[in-house]
Amino acid sequence: MRGNERKKGLGSNAIRLDDASLHGGCARSGLKIRVERVLRFDRCARHDRAMRPPILIVLHQETSTPGRLGHALRQRGYPLDVRRPRFGDPLPETMAGHSGAITFGGPMSANDTTDFIRREIDWLAVPLKEKKPFLGTELLAEGDSFPVQAFRYNGAAFALQFHPDVTHAMMCRWTTRGHERMLLPNAKPRGAHFADRAVYDPAGRAWLAAFLNHWLGKPAAPRQQASTG
Image (cartoon, rainbow, N blue to C red; front, side, top):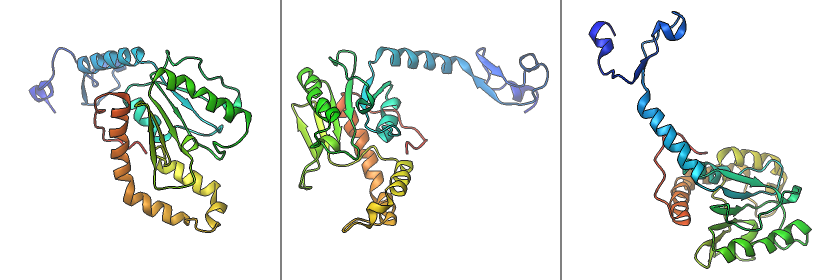
């Protein structure tokens, strides 16, 4: 752009990145950025995040992540307080400092007699008594029959038999590290897992967004172009 065209659309709060005073005379870019709105949004976003107590994330392996659930919670402005009781992290005596809690699964079973599993199950009395939003995925929703895939207790506590947290990267990791399990009787082969994901994942993603809005009592998160995995 040249002449008046270069000035078109610029206000008093805009910065030209081709301003020589900003770059020692080296920049030649014609890109323009309006900073006032961006800075105001950033200040509000940081203030909003600072005011929201974190979501407690309970994981059971050193390399585990909260996956898509973690992405979705961060998009809604919630910090994550990640703890691994299996490796000595304590669980809070009260949920007063947290907005909610999510306990994830793992290779262990809720029926195991391992000390940290028993302590973790005993700890569930804390969020249930305080009626804080609680979600258990797989580990704390285990059962012998599969027709019932989700459970609700006392309005604020939910347990799921399935994995709304799984991202594509997690599927790649799980099906690689656990490839021997896919040779077991009635197990699906690796390719079938990815074929099914292509069919069912859009509905699963939409369900998770609606569930989190209900679970946290919050309006829907802003739509974003980027994928959350």
